[in-house]
Image 1 (cartoon, rainbow, N blue to C red):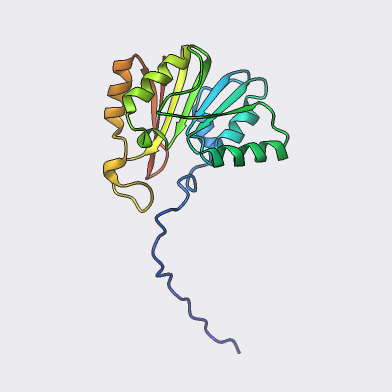
Image 2 (image 1 turned 60 degrees about the vertical axis):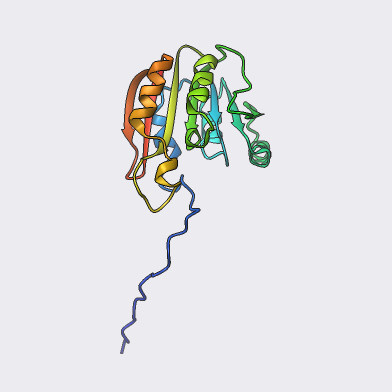
Length: 191
């Protein structure tokens, strides 16, 4: 004789510090970006390396410059790269929203959930533009500006139309935009 089991309803509160990448497959994101295996890519605000390592594997004949303001994050990614013998990733520290790169030195720049943290979005957009080669791409992955369970407060999020407008004033051309899920959007632009 079997006894009925009770299913207990989950009443726990959502955690505010959940991983923003939990709902994102890095390979799906990368499939939208115009990547070529020999490119020089910059990962701005690389954080834990969720995209850095897949980018490094994809551009096996190129380079990835992983940039972040948190030295501990850079050290952790460097250790991961060492363990998997991934040697085409360089690490650099972001200071004052300036990219430590030469003019016209990158084929593409990827920024996931980092532009909304910049002290001045226009300054970092201008610096990305400076570092990109002519025809280079810039992919921005950010939080939609609406209330969601996860992520920063709505007032701290980048409004997509304002981001696109600011980028166009600097000289970028919008090539595509994507709703990645109910919380995130991505825009891809060209220099």
